[in-house]
Amino acid sequence: MRLPKLRELKEAVTAVFSPRFTTRFPAEPCVVPERYRGKPKFDLDTCIGCGACVNVCPTNALTQINDIEADPLVRKITLQCDACIFCGNCRDNCTTETGITLSNEWDLAAMDRESFIETHEFELQICEKCGAIIGTKKHLVWLYEKLGPLAYTNPSLLLAKSGELLTKPQDIQGAPNTVCRVGEPQQQPDRVAETSDFMRILCPKCKCELNIQL
Ligand code: SF4
Ligand code: SF4
Image 1: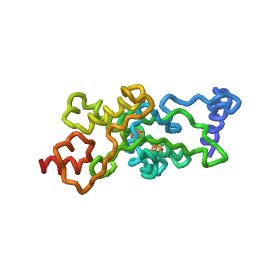
Image 2: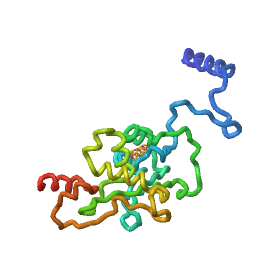
Image 3: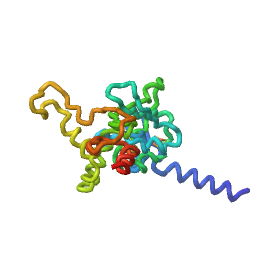
């Protein structure tokens, strides 16, 4: 019994003369370690709205819906930070690798749960033949840029890219006040595929049917 008491006494005396390990927050800002996993943050320049992060989120802090009532159709990706466990799965599985990161923001307390919710919208691309949702327009453009010259084998990617280039009114000759609708949906699901369909944005199913048929 005597030895453990001496050991504790030694630890207590050592602790009195050691530097402080706790921070003085909130009197002073708390500096977190470099690799600290804090609040997830989207980088909307590189996030393409693909939804891969949603699929790997273990707590459903990330969710998505395709809003087919909106005009244009959009995918809404929502982060509900109070359900996040800061596991980093979203960051580790992000398609573009930088679309979402864990920041060093940790002081997240709030009185209102609504303030934890943030939603981002991404315009959707639908199949011009059957109307099925293919993905977000940003995702198709990202694929085009990722594939480089190989993208020329896929007219859907070329058209998605050309749609992105011609979305500003000033880019369209003779139509200063209109927005170009390259790739505007023309849904005719029961129509037999024609050669001209090659130059439409098609879902994989319609593309496959077209290839078999022609
Ligand atoms: S850190 Fe984990 S729990 Fe939080 S949003 Fe990302 S995947 Fe979901
Ligand atoms: S996986 Fe990355 S690019 Fe895709 S929606 Fe999530 S954050 Fe954005």
